[in-house]
Length: 428
Image 1: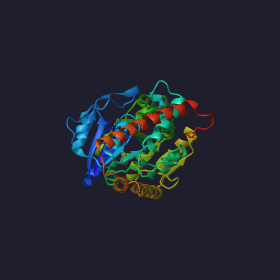
Image 2: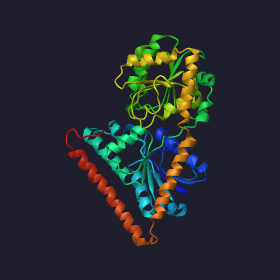
Image 3: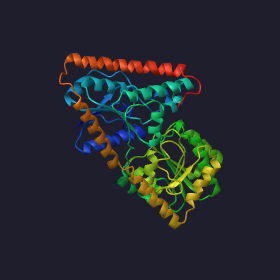
Image 4: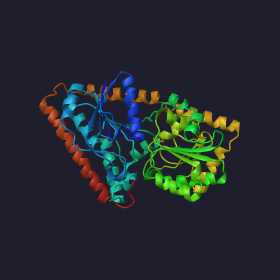
């Protein structure tokens, strides 16, 4: 099949969605499918990328590390004519997500959407953050789902959320895949050497974009409390972002900063080594659609301490592959759970590591990509069964106009839902 992939974030941007899309593109091409990626420009991107169309974009939107694509140039139509897509896969409901819908309508082909992000939890990136704004973006995103032929939810929690917010389009739960073999190949000694951490000390780790929505001030407080309990303990923080300074301040005030290593962004073997260097993985985000980094940590045999939240509870099995704590738990209790796993004896550590690796296999990249291809084929077969032989210019124009009206209608409905929703009826 020829798959046109539309995403607002892509390599070299580092983040869960960019990582997911990049892995999917590689997996599809490995299976012999052709993929055309339409994505914004990002600083540091390659000069030439086969199978990638870059759209001019505004950089660092709202102080974040995201790019916002500008209007799509007409050259995209020429490229699509040469590519001849069989299916469209969209990864965002805004910006290039609307372009994905227009391409789907123009070509008369199915559109699949992966619901990666709870946008209603990201209002802090705009000045006008409010409950009205949260309802607006939630309604826009769920309305977008209903214009698609199928929706992929990365976790059962997100599928439940979508159905609870009025999504009637078919929803398939397909977790984002992780490369379990690569992650299991990490070298703990090499990872600790790179971070200047002694070989035989207990290490608490975290990997991710250091952003406000990740609840990282709480996490830093819990890690600091854990380190204060025992002078031999260290922490390894992989990633970068606007919350790095806040976390550093917490560690400085707690007197544990000399035992905390911030590596910045790591990829490839260096990232695998970092995971392997950790004895326990700490995670406190409430904004995930799927805890991808949790599956990555577990692939290296590292148990996890996390807060019970959507996308997390599907991965962490309390007292089996880690600890799943109540959402309102205090930092002291979180620190105690970290210490509990750090202090495991050899037999218990082996048990947790084996359970973690077993869990990670459920999220393997091959399994995920096989299920996505099957979904493509199903949507494509349904589209072919109902396809009208007459695909004249008039019919193409009619489809395009109808889709444009759908997009406008979704915006109008979202505005109404955000402003006029009765008190107490919010399903967020």
